Image 1 (cartoon, rainbow, N blue to C red):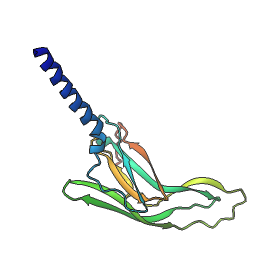
Image 2: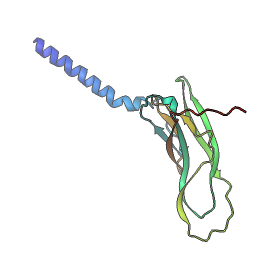
Image 3: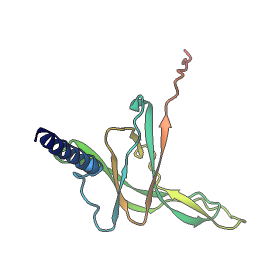
Image 4: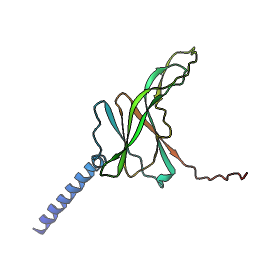
Length: 160
């Protein structure tokens, strides 16, 4: 009878542990709102590092387009929104429109390139392996990212 109780208890604990782990990923974003119509919610989870403060995350909001040799970009609003009651923030990218372009004569054919939003200071984010970065952007754009890491070497400044 004691063995049966132990087996039953072990089964219950195992089932609870498995269900908690299965919902763990969902629990990290359940407090964030669903994307509004016409928008897509992106979630970026980065791997744990020895020191998150030595890294940054650079975001690129844009789309693939056929372009000639002229430089192109998009402009838009980057809003950091407080998630009320949770102490977290998320990004909303809105009002995206075509930016300025150079006007060079381009002899070659058009090529497909990823053209991104021009807002460099607002799209470099703190690296945080403990909580996801949640970003909402218009559905006809995509989100890409890359990591930046600080060098271990410190340079001496020149006195003048």
